[in-house]
Length: 301
Image (cartoon, rainbow, N blue to C red; front, side, top):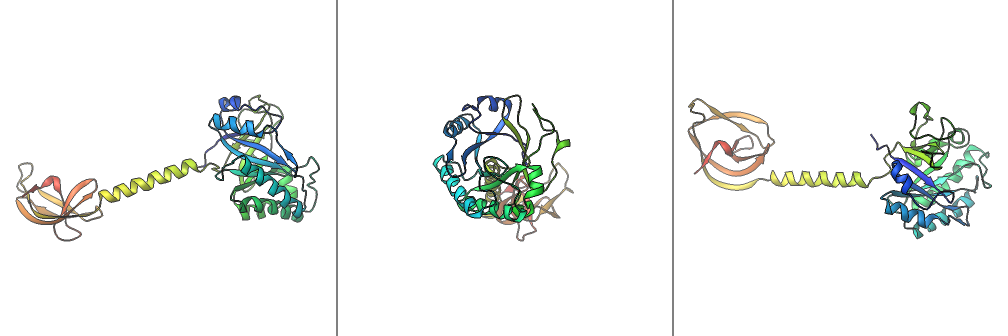
């Protein structure tokens, strides 16, 4: 299951300090960087700096004004990417397209034309090496965007806004979740914890850093085990003494993969050819791949 992280999205209307959001439980921040082809968020630098100071993961977003124009979409995307690079937004994070009604952006074109322009924007960002996502309201997604085409191209990448009620909400009520395919993050309120900031909850794992660390640790552990399990050439003879005072007691052999095989008698001597760690035990090879005796039952001669 993906990590359920609280995330806030901030623009010029929010503080330059992320302290209150961090203490409320946010783990990620999406900072507005640009709008159209000429607007920069004047607080972006300070908001990003504060996010890093509070150990929050930082993504960026752009407010679209291109409506259904492919050519304008590409220009806005290039403007956005340049600003993301200027702010050193990590390419492990997301660049989000905020495509909704406002500031001249029209959503009422044909679904096909809208989607074509949206994909043109996302492609520029993706080709620049960033992860990409698309934000809008649930109603706009359903009526004016072919989300299946977006998901087909970029996977689970929708950031959908849908509120159970207006006003303060501290935690999402999944009974009001806007069910649709491809949702990576849900904006469930515009007043999270009474802080005057949008509140979001992730449904898709957006931060892969920890997953990569876990994977590297796992691979390192596997490699270590493999090294421990490597066969080492050893020659000599071992004696299997009578164990527990019972001359009828026998010792069971293993194969090289740790599966138990036949038994051998105690009070016997065996020539060995190599040693290896099997099932966490040092074992000696008695001749074939199915003849490994645990060293703890032997005395090396």
